[in-house]
Image (cartoon, rainbow, N blue to C red; front, top):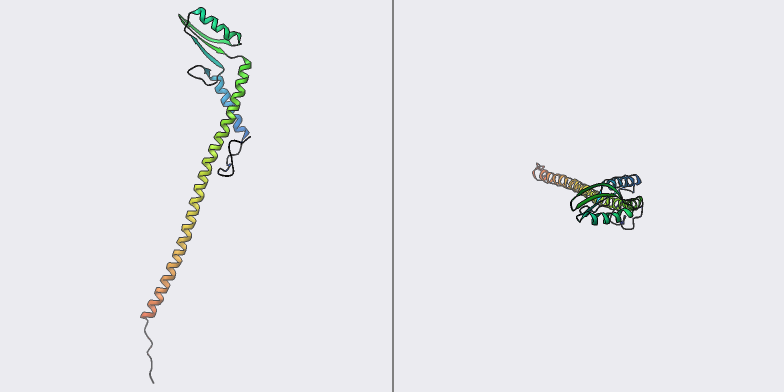
Length: 174
């Protein structure tokens, strides 16, 4: 997989490696979506069918529709009312094949972007975990040093108190 657009190593660690099975699953999902879609001015996503609507007299509409049929499109469904002709055209195999190549390329681009985004998120999460762990380690070490210092100070204070308040030995003068 070409990673020219996404740079790993300097600021982003590649936790989620390239997985061809994951990419193929995404391509299959996009192809299935392509075969469900119907292209129109309202839904410009690629689809195997094209929604064609004409609100001119039937003669004009049929002449325009004939141009589509000459290009290899076939009629899948149609609805005809006065001054309204709606036809769902199925694309010819050559256009479908070209569209499927475009769908696969777009899926590859989207997969690389998605993987990079997931890697950025995981890198940030791992950095946060490492920083938190180091903070806890430093806090534990500081607490240990403070406890040792406290114990030393208590021992000194006890020694000072014992020296100050211990019974003094009587001196014998001869």
